[in-house]
Length: 108
Image (cartoon, rainbow, N blue to C red; front, side, top):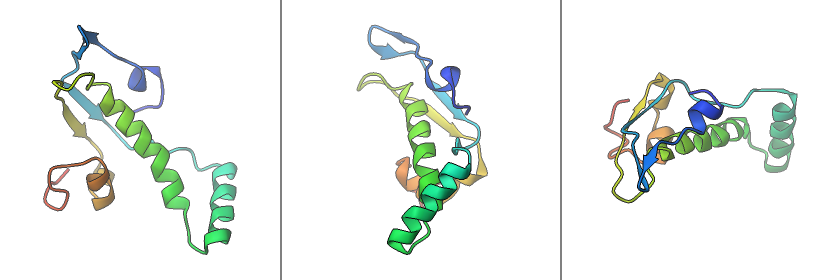
């Protein structure tokens, strides 16, 4: 997945229902680890005495993944196959938050 109009902004629907049957997410769209993100992480870590860099990187990526999946669901009747094509999705945090059927047993 790439952060841009084609990956997050495409919508194909008819009569309020999505015509997208499959969503393939190739890679995890983590934000860039720039000086701002490092400074933000250091400030949060100072206040909490815990390293929050991973959480600060995961939440924007999680939101982008959910938005991409959401493009295929526009009505209660819509269903879609979601293909998570990156080994990094194969951890319990991603499985639980993306709501896989059984996150401990589902292999991505």
